[in-house]
Image (cartoon, rainbow, N blue to C red; front, side):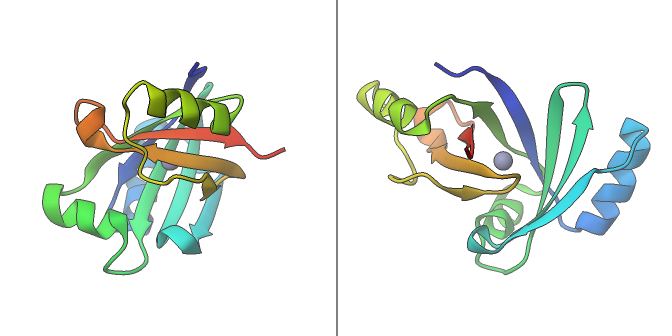
Length: 134
Ligand code: ZN
Protein backbone atom coordinates (compact mmCIF):
# COMPACT_ATOMS: atom_id res chain seq x y z
CA UNK A 1 0.00 0.00 0.00
CA UNK A 2 1.18 3.50 -0.76
CA UNK A 3 0.81 5.60 2.39
CA UNK A 4 0.81 9.19 1.20
CA UNK A 5 2.39 11.58 -1.25
CA UNK A 6 5.87 12.06 0.19
CA UNK A 7 6.96 14.73 -2.24
CA UNK A 8 6.50 16.13 -5.71
CA UNK A 9 9.61 16.40 -7.87
CA UNK A 10 10.00 19.36 -10.21
CA UNK A 11 12.69 19.48 -12.89
CA UNK A 12 14.41 22.86 -13.18
CA UNK A 13 17.22 24.20 -15.33
CA UNK A 14 18.84 26.23 -12.58
CA UNK A 15 18.48 25.36 -8.92
CA UNK A 16 19.60 28.86 -7.89
CA UNK A 17 16.93 30.56 -9.99
CA UNK A 18 14.27 28.04 -8.97
CA UNK A 19 15.08 28.40 -5.27
CA UNK A 20 14.54 32.14 -5.57
CA UNK A 21 11.32 31.71 -7.52
CA UNK A 22 9.82 29.02 -5.29
CA UNK A 23 10.79 30.78 -2.07
CA UNK A 24 8.82 33.79 -3.34
CA UNK A 25 5.91 31.54 -4.30
CA UNK A 26 5.85 29.61 -1.03
CA UNK A 27 6.78 32.51 1.25
CA UNK A 28 9.56 30.45 2.83
CA UNK A 29 13.06 29.23 2.10
CA UNK A 30 14.21 25.72 1.19
CA UNK A 31 15.44 23.77 4.20
CA UNK A 32 18.01 21.62 2.49
CA UNK A 33 20.21 21.25 -0.58
CA UNK A 34 21.63 17.89 -1.44
CA UNK A 35 23.71 16.51 -4.29
CA UNK A 36 22.86 12.94 -5.35
CA UNK A 37 25.91 11.86 -7.30
CA UNK A 38 24.44 8.54 -8.49
CA UNK A 39 21.44 10.30 -10.09
CA UNK A 40 23.42 13.24 -11.47
CA UNK A 41 21.27 15.80 -9.68
CA UNK A 42 21.34 18.65 -7.23
CA UNK A 43 18.16 18.83 -5.20
CA UNK A 44 16.59 21.31 -2.86
CA UNK A 45 13.63 20.72 -0.57
CA UNK A 46 10.80 22.91 0.65
CA UNK A 47 8.37 21.84 3.34
CA UNK A 48 4.78 23.05 3.12
CA UNK A 49 2.81 21.62 6.00
CA UNK A 50 3.24 17.87 5.49
CA UNK A 51 4.05 18.18 1.81
CA UNK A 52 7.55 18.30 0.45
CA UNK A 53 8.53 19.81 -2.85
CA UNK A 54 11.79 18.61 -4.37
CA UNK A 55 13.50 20.71 -7.03
CA UNK A 56 15.89 18.82 -9.28
CA UNK A 57 18.70 20.25 -11.39
CA UNK A 58 20.92 18.10 -13.61
CA UNK A 59 24.63 18.03 -12.81
CA UNK A 60 25.55 16.31 -16.07
CA UNK A 61 24.13 16.31 -19.58
CA UNK A 62 23.28 12.59 -19.64
CA UNK A 63 21.31 12.55 -16.37
CA UNK A 64 17.60 11.68 -16.42
CA UNK A 65 16.70 15.25 -15.45
CA UNK A 66 18.72 16.75 -18.31
CA UNK A 67 17.02 14.41 -20.77
CA UNK A 68 13.59 15.16 -19.32
CA UNK A 69 14.08 18.93 -19.68
CA UNK A 70 15.42 18.50 -23.19
CA UNK A 71 12.29 16.56 -24.19
CA UNK A 72 9.56 18.22 -22.17
CA UNK A 73 10.98 21.38 -20.67
CA UNK A 74 10.89 22.29 -16.99
CA UNK A 75 7.96 21.08 -14.92
CA UNK A 76 6.58 18.29 -12.77
CA UNK A 77 8.92 15.34 -13.10
CA UNK A 78 7.59 12.77 -10.64
CA UNK A 79 5.28 12.08 -7.73
CA UNK A 80 6.81 10.21 -4.82
CA UNK A 81 4.79 8.03 -2.48
CA UNK A 82 5.89 6.87 0.92
CA UNK A 83 5.93 3.14 1.57
CA UNK A 84 6.65 1.19 4.72
CA UNK A 85 8.59 -1.62 3.06
CA UNK A 86 9.96 -0.82 -0.39
CA UNK A 87 10.93 -4.42 -1.27
CA UNK A 88 7.41 -5.67 -0.51
CA UNK A 89 5.82 -2.88 -2.54
CA UNK A 90 8.16 -3.45 -5.48
CA UNK A 91 7.19 -7.12 -5.47
CA UNK A 92 3.48 -6.34 -5.15
CA UNK A 93 3.49 -3.74 -7.95
CA UNK A 94 5.50 -5.98 -10.26
CA UNK A 95 2.85 -8.69 -9.80
CA UNK A 96 0.17 -6.08 -10.57
CA UNK A 97 1.88 -5.51 -13.92
CA UNK A 98 3.71 -2.25 -13.27
CA UNK A 99 7.14 -1.84 -14.79
CA UNK A 100 9.94 -1.07 -12.35
CA UNK A 101 12.77 1.04 -13.76
CA UNK A 102 15.24 -0.19 -11.16
CA UNK A 103 14.96 -3.76 -9.93
CA UNK A 104 16.74 -3.03 -6.66
CA UNK A 105 16.04 -0.08 -4.36
CA UNK A 106 18.61 2.66 -4.71
CA UNK A 107 19.74 5.57 -2.60
CA UNK A 108 17.79 8.76 -3.09
CA UNK A 109 18.02 12.22 -1.59
CA UNK A 110 16.82 12.94 1.93
CA UNK A 111 17.85 9.60 3.45
CA UNK A 112 15.50 7.48 1.36
CA UNK A 113 15.54 4.19 -0.47
CA UNK A 114 13.79 4.70 -3.76
CA UNK A 115 12.43 2.89 -6.81
CA UNK A 116 10.87 4.36 -9.95
CA UNK A 117 7.95 2.95 -11.93
CA UNK A 118 8.02 3.48 -15.67
CA UNK A 119 5.54 6.16 -16.83
CA UNK A 120 4.31 3.90 -19.63
CA UNK A 121 2.80 1.62 -16.99
CA UNK A 122 1.37 4.45 -14.84
CA UNK A 123 -0.62 6.65 -17.24
CA UNK A 124 2.34 8.81 -18.13
CA UNK A 125 3.35 9.77 -14.58
CA UNK A 126 6.78 8.86 -13.31
CA UNK A 127 6.11 7.33 -9.89
CA UNK A 128 8.74 7.12 -7.16
CA UNK A 129 8.38 4.83 -4.20
CA UNK A 130 10.33 5.92 -1.17
CA UNK A 131 11.06 4.39 2.15
CA UNK A 132 12.75 6.14 5.03
CA UNK A 133 16.16 4.54 5.66
CA UNK A 134 16.18 2.98 9.07
ZN1 ZN B 1 11.93 12.42 -5.65
